[in-house]
Length: 101
Length: 278
Image (tube, rainbow over all chains, first blue to last red):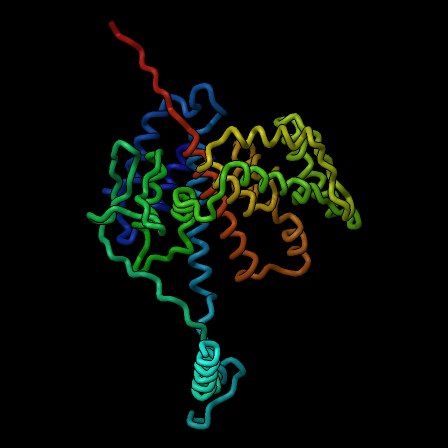
């Protein structure tokens, strides 16, 4: 993934994560943008592995997106306790005696 | 006399409890503690001379043990502040891996020292996931050979060890020399950082894969995919169940990414050397 793509996805994920959907005064967004400015000429930090900054960005992106996906799956499937009689009847296609035929 | 009193008292207690005992109700609803409500509006980061602190409105964030939350790295504090900010109505502590890792490192609830943790990590080596390969099924064997062998090779080259994979149930033999080499590498990290390593190894069940991710040889998704290689292979035949396979995959990815971020942000130090303009 190129550095620009990582930035765009990171900002997208931050927007999704923030409760009001706005990252105008988000600390993380500001920090990431500042880092991008800093490594504008080269994202290969001196004397260290290649593409170190981009790797960090990607890792954070994975963190945010995996957590979001996990929460979505959890919300859809997590147990809500016992089903009511009506729900059970609906699952197997029966009707309650009180329902109209 | 005293013992007699005691005995009669005990009997009285026993009788009174047995009278109160009731048939347990037949409901099987599990009672969980309600998660704490989000009690703050804004989160931010403060710099004090000890390090960076996270502030929720005007309150300072504290660890579960009550110690003040301070970390040395600014991006780590910002990430924790963002995580607290991304909680909606309730604070879901079980899904805040990065904060949890920082709390564990600060509190050190099990009172571990460096030697304990290095030993814990070393004990993972003989049962490392990628060292146990399976040769009864040809496709799976090929897959493991193509995917896992390069990582083992990389590890051997990086740490100058000689780890060999095993094809049956007997664990691979690991020489003392290799153990010392790997132990030396882990000893060079600080105690905080080792917490991150343990978290990564626990997630992946493999010390080789964990080192490969932390040394930036593999991206996080790839490492998680490699640690679940056989599961993915079997999924091809038996089908993918979203609420089990996908859920565990996403959780492992989030956990691993948190530990990798924690380790890297903890040990990266930026020295900026500016040109002198005279």
